[in-house]
Every structure is written in structure tokens, then in C-alpha cells.
Length: 76
Image (cartoon, rainbow, N blue to C red):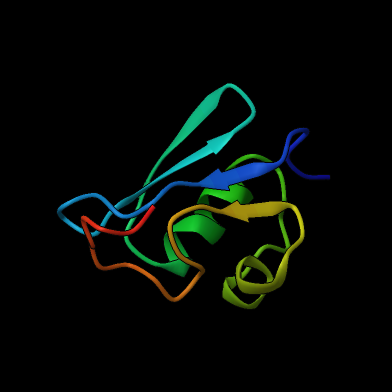
């Protein structure tokens, strides 16, 4: 089982944290792939790990991919 809606990871904030949402639900602020994996596990996706977070088609990365955690005010 897993999230019912696609997961969106928003661009990094000034502190490097990225908002994580699944559908209409805010899951939290992630500061790395491990945080995103933990949020997915909390929603019932028991096998989520860092490798899954990097490659899953379920996750939409905005403002940089899974290796982007630094704030860049010019990035969209």
C-alpha cells in the first residue's frame, strides 16, 4: 500500500527544507531523501527508502531533483 495521490516535493526554502505533499495533505518539511522516505512510510508505503525516493515516478520534483537541497532564489 502507499499514498493515494502523487507526492510533490517543492523547491528548497531558504533553510534548504523542501515541503512535501501527497494530494491535499502536507506531510512535512524534508531536509534530505531519508525524510521523504520516512514521510512515505508514515503514509503506509512500508518499503520506501532513499533509492525509491530518487527513482519513483510517483514523486514529482519541483525546483530541482532529488539531489537538490540548497536554496537558489533564481531556480523555478
